[in-house]
Image (cartoon, rainbow, N blue to C red; front, side, top):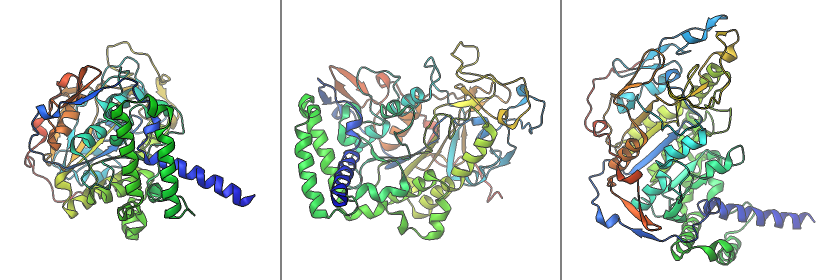
Length: 492
């Protein structure tokens, strides 16, 4: 009986592994009548300053005034008036003259001479200020819902540039599980959409178990795994999804399975083995699953990774989703990201990979203790109202959704060193007041660094679909070039 159960579990493990290794193809539906034709030959690729991208995703709404754009500090005390609270942490100088970060981010501050900060990001007005709705918009550049499946930015990059290493998946997403609230909404943008399954994300929910994602289930020999893989392909080819799909989508799904199997059977699989890192280096990154995701991202870039996303993970009312205990949670989250993000930048710089790797740190929107949404506009209030006076530490912090200001950090990939771009007001509402940046500019700046033309598009169901809506996104050219700001040697 035990042996039979073991075989059943082994089969289940195999199916689970091959489903994940098929780049999440089963997480999204395939259009019934899609016809995809490339128009990429009509555009010319510009000179690239980057070959790879690492996106460090602060899921849940990271308050800019509590992190990378601190305002006047109001220490906690009972009876403190809520409207006086702009930042709940004191400011600390960074390595760049005149640039200050919130307390708890000193390590990241010490690598800002290698990167730039955008302090004027404005999230879109999408009606209700919903996390997964805004995350969809940030990752695809398209407002939901769409009549066709909009590809994730990582899928566009995988499609246009292909793998840098033929064995390493060109789009890898780490840290986000799909087993909690809003799972289907999260799956909606973790996809290659109409571009085809082969360009979708290779999902690694837990980076500490990355090696398990790229090897046969425990107790299964390679020969047995190969036999089951052949059977799996036959079953997949006869499935209802494949029968309804276009020739392009069928071929794309088969190619994605072949790519995944090639990785599972390749020496490159050792890249996913974090135990090969020196203990001291491993411990520096080991603050959380996110920290280990940064370590794995480093290893992937050094071995031909193209686009890697590492998320702090979105789960309602956890992580950066600080509707309660805002100050306490922000302190915890900063402790999770500060050391590994800084170490990632240092390691890439020391190995010579930072010059050609664009590293981005961003979040879907910001937060404020009082404002909900955009100042002066009616939006549905989705957070409990703050009391006029703070009597408990749980009310001390940034709780409400705020879309008129936000910070994005960038390093490497041709980005100017020591640049501070944009500005928000020092008084509430802390809105963007100089060099306002919107999402299509962010996307096109990334494509610009990679040499992907702004007019790149495909015809899907009879209409052109661009990397940014209508191909109107323009890169922020001021982000790129030589160092423009002197920096200090070090900040304690």
